[in-house]
Length: 298
Ligand SMILES: [Cu+2]
Image 1: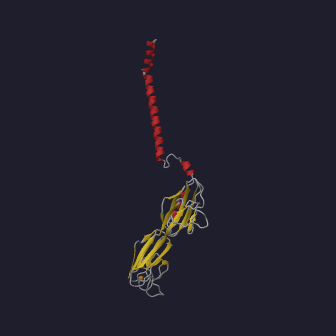
Image 2: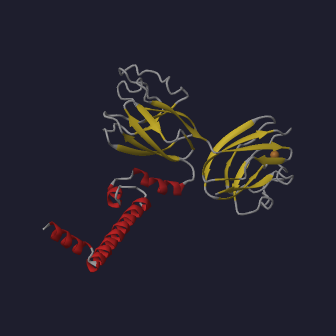
Image 3: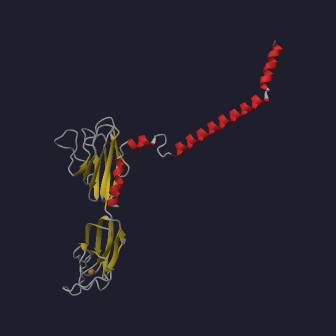
């Protein structure tokens, strides 16, 4: 009996046909498993959101989606993403070029918070107490805010604020004192100009559209001015002003300093569209003497 069982086992184990089918089946299964794994791994890697499926990611409201539209209007400003926790404010940038600013604020804390933007020269941790409200600070200079945000929720607002120093804070009772504040800077997009007898020099001849601040210094010995003219005419081809000898036509003037005494400076900010401009001094005979240059707003 023992011998017979051995015979049966050995007969089935060494059956060449059965062995052939078994190897073929194993090979098919192995190839199928490898192929499926490869497809799964590649699919996972090529998906930007990792394991989050496309439909779920798309269903989630995306507050940042408003950014491209605003960016098309102006190259200045942009989006600031902020996160509120108990008790801290974090932002993905602490300065921005003057222009429309979109604040996208998420409350990741367990309690209600708010997000206030205050225009002030006071350092972030030196805002005065509000004399009428216990454990709150004075909101003088508030230029924009979310209002209260519930835990887990987001709010977005857009403001165009001038260059300067700002404090961002939460003014829920006790939250400022607990540390919910930070300094924020809006920087002017500045063109520095120097006037001499008889030349204008600038540190840049092109800027992006949006607010531009001209800082103009008269280093000459006589009075000069600084005029910005929107025109398709080249810098040295402005027509003469028939009514004023020695001066040129100022049609298209979008901003100027007025007269600047020797040694003095003047600053002005204008928001002008893309195009070609001529910058010049129109004191009598100064244009003809060479006080002009081409300027481009992109
Ligand atoms: Cu001049």
